Image (cartoon, rainbow, N blue to C red; front, side, top):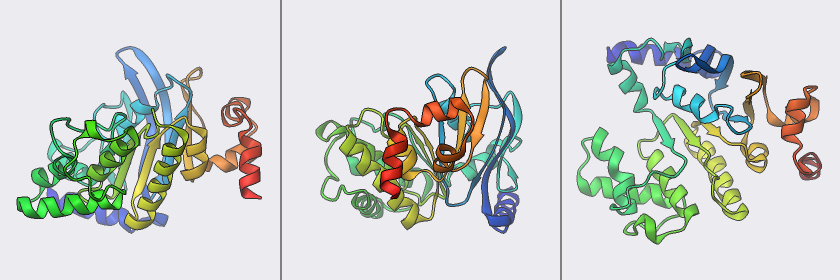
Amino acid sequence: MREALTMATGAARRATAEVAIEVRHMTMAYGSFVLMRDLNFVIRRGDIFIIMGGSGCGKSTVLRHLIGLKEPAAGEIFYGDFNFTRATPEEREQLLRRFGILYQGGALWSSMTLAENVGLPLGEFTDLTPAQIREIAALKLALVGLKGFEDYYPSEISGGMQKRAGIARAIALDPEVLFFDEPSAGLDPISSRLLDNLILELRASLGATIVVVTHELASIFTIGNNCVFLDAESRTQIATGDPRDLLAHSQDPRVITFLTRGEQRNEVAERDG
């Protein structure tokens, strides 16, 4: 079983320009209520892929489908050539070990230090000794700018630092794919920009594919190079591609309205110029 998954993963790595994730004709529903229908998009290896759209359109629900917390009402999800939707629980578990996930609130255990939080996946999925786990946890915390905070508890640090600690835990097992659900939620603009910079650094240093749920325009244009735009009214996707290309060339008024909130078009043009 593990060999079959390894072969599928190997084939995916040899695939054209490296498709990391492909969603095919996916419908998301709660009972008879259809939230989104016929979603089709490709996430390339090394992308920072943005799932965006207005409130209530199902952005976080897409992410939950991608990591197997919800099942599609129709359609399929592929990781390379591996059909995640039709996989057995054992096959899924093997793939999930190569994911890193940051949930919206950071999801740190308040009764554990930052080092203990980061060490949780290492203790669960490796045979490392406690000393080795502590050493790796310290390294991961240093990578996100939290060197020296190993013995702090979540309540003793700021919200932005909690998000970075959550990222340190997400990268503990050196994942191939990172999923971030509203990473900038609740942060001030400076902390949000620092977090965006960290995401860019992680993509460069880890070579990971990163999937981000967000509606924050500053983050979308700072970090994203590919996206899917979900529309709550039509209950489907209405655009895919580089957010900057959509801003410059889309003819859909819904896309333009979303991407030009405030003076975003001018700000992007000034940064590019």
